[in-house]
Amino acid sequence: MIAVKQVEIPRTASDKSDSRQVSVVEALKLESETLKDLDHPHIVQYLGFEETPTFLSIFLEYVPGGSIASCLRKHGRFDEEVTKSFTGQILEGLEYLHSKGILHRDLKADNILVETSGICKISDFGISKRTEDINVIGAYTSMQGTVFWMAPEVINSQKKGYNSKIDIWSVGCVVFEMWTGQRPWSGQEAMAVLLHLYNTKQAPPVPNEVTLSPLAHDFRQQCFAMDPDERPTAAELRQHRYLELQPGWSFNGFK
Image (cartoon, rainbow, N blue to C red; front, side):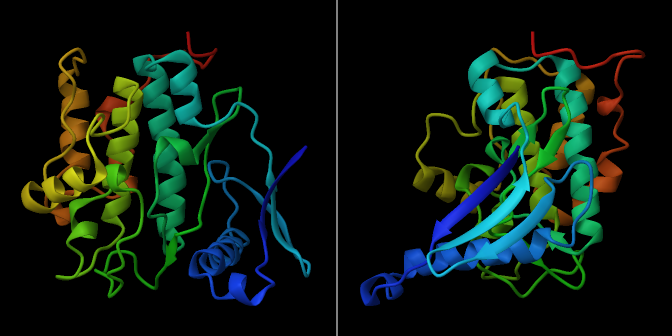
């Protein structure tokens, strides 16, 4: 079994002038370019690319089990050890991406696939960005990503741009999803969240019914540091004591 991601190539004059259709094709080409050089157990594996007069296709490994988001919808919020295990794996994949000079820019539970054995793989590189040095604040100031998972400096990027630390904020949002079983800023409109992030730079609030341990609270604070320079790198965050699994623990389903 393999997975195929496919888009139709605009052929008529009106389709070719439709910027949305053109950008979808461009995104798939970019995704192919990004993925073809990557090889890591926590990144979805690229298998090939085909362009015909009608379609553009990327061939990827098939990951049975769905995304973290679909598992949350099915099973509700995750047990603590599952959350820790998945977070550690996501950070491992992210550390590898950043070492290759790639910013993902759209990390969310929908874009992390889960094998039935509990192995996580980062997917969906349609708006990722390759850069010479991921630590340098880039000249790219385009507001890319999905608002509810977006770091404040992406929204206010006209000032000075952003760097790889935007992915750390998004990791915080994915962990938030696993803790709570809902998306960040649940119940709020995108525009209201944009304004809130722009004005206050505050992280999504934890619902009252969710109690975080002191270590989990510290992990959350580090991901959501207002100043990107104060957020740890993926490599540093992987060492956080919150992520230490119980001795002998192994994944055997969600409940």
